[in-house]
Length: 261
Image (cartoon, rainbow, N blue to C red; front, side, top):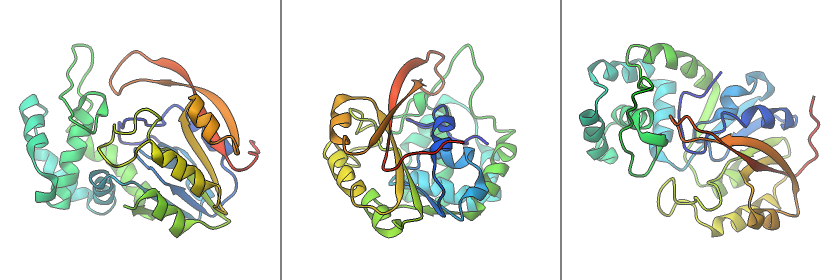
């Protein structure tokens, strides 16, 4: 199945190249979940335990509400309009002043109708060539499968360092999709910066589990992670809702030799 989210840096296209490289494991962990494309596209029964984590509380609240309170979440959309005025009304709201369900509705609305799924300073997206990405009449239909898929998934809101410290075991597999090098502040100020790549490298050098890290192909990253296995894969980038795609290389960094079927 597909993720229900458009999200900056989502792995909708790259997932099919990563999933065959995942080794046998018992515990599956997405450290920077984002739209969780691998979770939704991989087979559910290959992992005894599944965990998704993200530092963005709006995103994690949305996952938890869709998992536990889908009916109430859907009910809110009966009174919502797809319009520029509604978009900017939602944008002005202070998330901390809302209930969890209201906060989840707000975030989902801004993601679905914002240009390029921007987290910082979202702007209303409208085009003469496509319909709105939010279909209010089909919200329940589109999210019902997501609700069922999340039923057995643990949803965490921790820093990446805490995730490794808490869940690292020999039979744990980590999928790691940090902000791209050079795009560290796209998800908010002070969340992940240039120095975090070195901190992440040092953590990965000491874990007992296995991991795949996906990142844009730049010389600094190749040099920083040169002690690990590095593969180059081709993918394409496009802003959510945009028609043009840019074909690029991306790096898959691992601490094991993958055996693909």
